[in-house]
Image 1: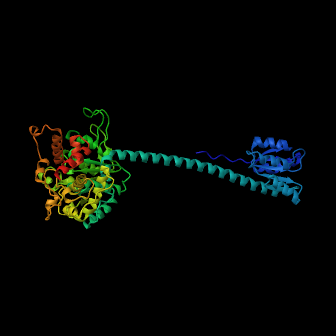
Image 2: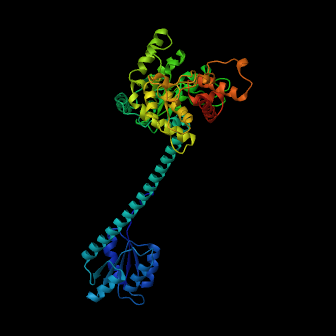
Image 3: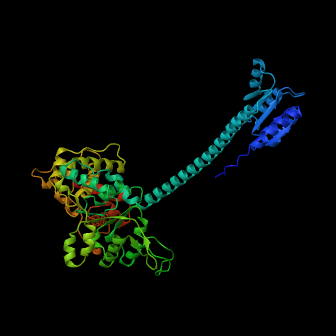
Length: 518
């Protein structure tokens, strides 16, 4: 910041009579002012440009340039225009004084002057000049501070944008799933769901408290974890989802805690683990019951003291992470079997949130159905989402959905394809991919469109040996897709991953199968 300059007042005294200058000098010099004297108007302008005086005491009647002309010249020069001018004049008539003020003077002293009056006027105008100087310095300092703050704000915004970009890259897959499910607050209006959401809202405020989510497969545990994160004080930090059941055993410790270069074969660079990536945010551990026991002990330590040690490193690192864990398994049974640590369970289960299965919130099925039909229609590029008949909704309500909301979503994706954009009927709803049974078969009334028995051979089967695969590419494709869907539990995205094909290819084959079935 610019330093404040020391203030030393300089007075320019102008009079064509040297004796008058001597009197003024004797009066003002003892006051500590620096004095510069001129005996003509031309000398006054030259000295003013060189000395930059704080105040000018200017005689009016002088040969050549008189005081009025000198004052006007000072006012025309942008570098001198702010210097106050006090006239010393023997003329005190109104016309002369008016002309002096029009020329730019700020005050006047009448000759013969009184010493006390001169000192009082000089002190007043020097004080005002000092105040203007200090104000200008403060304004410069303020402008510099504003510039610094703007730079700091711009730097912070850039850092936050970079953090958001990194967060988006880390959670792109689950973010896409969140968009599809529209889980701003889980869909539905049933009392069961409302009670769970009130508990989610309560837990959002406790950004440091871990939560154990307990629920069947397909109840939306990751989506609830995201809701806990997005509504918490950690919302601006990263959300890192980890499926504990899908991690390679030989790399699991490195993936959680990171490693340093050379820690093991293939460790060519330092790498951050999940805990460091989630620093300042939330780490979601799905299927926590499948975590190896050897890693459970290290996880417990991190939960206790917030420190991680990368593989091959000598020093620990401090992390600030909220852990939200989830399980669809009975952890108590796994504790009894010795595959899950009791102390870790109690550390995770301090706050437990149970997610209701879809069969306990069937009032939400119509809302969920309308949402999933709309999303499927958009994904398939349909101009308009098909409707769903009351009979089809009744069929859905009669089914228990062991796969919960995920199963309902997959079921309706297939129904949109099977209906070819027309109103979805019970005959378009399939129970699963390992049985020709339709959901409508679970109703007391017969289905609107019964399934021809001769189509049963077209339905998926659990296994098919290589010798049994037909030498017809289309038929072989159908069998492979059916097997993949059976392996994936009806999840089309997972089946497409297993086969290494785009999901649109699976949709096409399913549509052909449904056409044959009708």
